[in-house]
Length: 246
Image (cartoon, rainbow, N blue to C red):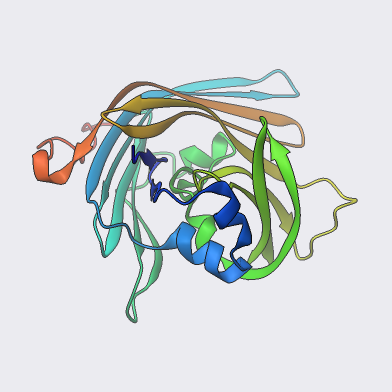
């Protein structure tokens, strides 16, 4: 039975491609399959908490909300942290405007980027790094008993080492490097999807873990909804305004 895999905020449709046949594709063909728009339009919403711990003992915790809508032309998504700061993230696939866009709803009163305090970027949750420029394919690896193809991608002066499950075509781990990739040197930040949940035959990532030198962050989504657009989309999917005074 065909299943759909819904990652925060990116929808990856399992096309029934066997792990063996996906393993035989060229690097470019595999990435194209990972990135391409899907024929089914869906939506999803997740609520939970971000927990952040630093080596100096400082701890941070805040509620987080994510909404997503996947069309054949674009992914629309929203991230709201602590009801004080929100972002609209878009990923367009074709045309002169193709690429990733991030639009803050407004700055927090302090002027700080709240997600940055947790070691996060809005694009981390949308996994838009899968659209970075292809550099090379690296040796394959196994994560949680799943075979993964490994790609090195670049955006300006930053590189990401991306491990993708060959059976279901979803990112399991990403590691970032500055300026150049050296396998003998540790990355300066890591992200891993570690927990999943099926909702109406749509698979959602419900736990993301990140870490870097001196810090670690865990995002747990405990409330989840998802569905096909043809069945109707919730009127409150995207938050139009943040609470006043926040």
